[in-house]
Amino acid sequence: MNEVDLSPLNGILIDGLEFCAKIYAIFEHIRNETDGINRLRLRNTSIEKKLLEELLPICRYIQTYYRVGRYISVRWIDGNQSFDAELHQKGYYINKGYYPALAHLEVTTAMHENEHWIWKLLSQGKGAFAPEGIQKLKRKPVQSEPVVFTNTEHVEHFVPIIIGQITKKAEIPYPADTSLIIQCSLNSLYTGDDWDLLALEVKRQMPNHKFREVLMFDGTTERTAVIM
Image (cartoon, rainbow, N blue to C red):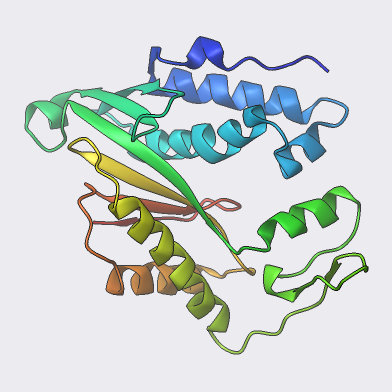
């Protein structure tokens, strides 16, 4: 196994699209290793955790917003500061004052508390259903049982998980113009209507915060929602 080194990216200002290309190349490098898929599933080291829980979500933000008139460079900082990345923006929209020249990103993940058991079962070649169906009985292997949701119950169950993450992050002081990115590991299969309802309910129950915006996205599909 060739160990991946993220340090060349740390603290370096890079054009956003170039940053994405570098991160995707690292992801593919790990995935193509002999045990790469399990490494990514289990996130046993800081490399996989930072890649999946910080760097790829930053890429999602960049690819959501990078466009003609809004050119984004990013400086990912691996440290204990109150944000994960610094954005330097330029172009017509910045000159007109629509977006700040300097902004920051904070990344978090919203998932059911049993989600990590799903990863472990899959890494063992076993089947897994919704995280609510995880059975942990004393002196017995962890089991995943099918879960039946009625109507929009799965959405209703997941909304408090997202709201909890926003509430926790809202208590931390951040620099001006910080955007919060929420990567969602959803608790079931979601249709487009389910996702729209999730975003609507999060917006309706949104706690007070000082973020410039909250960008939530489904970690499995391309679905994204921006909640101001």
